[in-house]
Image 1 (cartoon, helix red, strand yellow):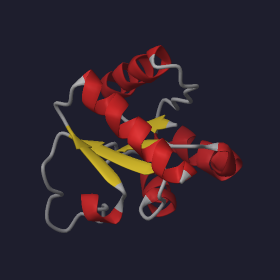
Image 2 (image 1 turned 90 degrees about the vertical axis):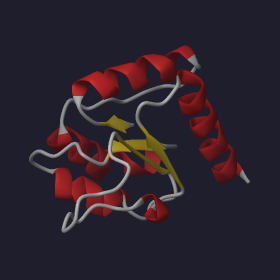
Image 3 (image 1 turned 60 degrees about the horizontal axis):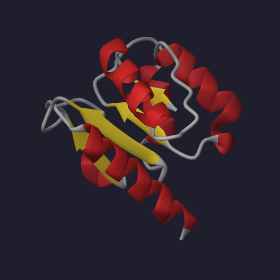
Length: 117
């Protein structure tokens, strides 16, 4: 599952589909929270924009912050002071934008391999 703002979500969705992955890309935080509520056990990987915001965002963060399937991405090198968002240390992997297609594919494959081990 990819959760994030439209431009980043759509790019990641195309990249991952081209690499042969099945992708669920909810349009907003509320829809992402519903996917996590109803299908979390079926997800192999969760790509989450740390700056997505919107209704349901806090619920998504709570469910994914310490999940080993989560990869957080952001255009920010650090979280702003006072924001209750996971640091990259809270997740297995993190991507900082701008990132290359090769880096996205490498990170996804690496995370999926770690889960299989």
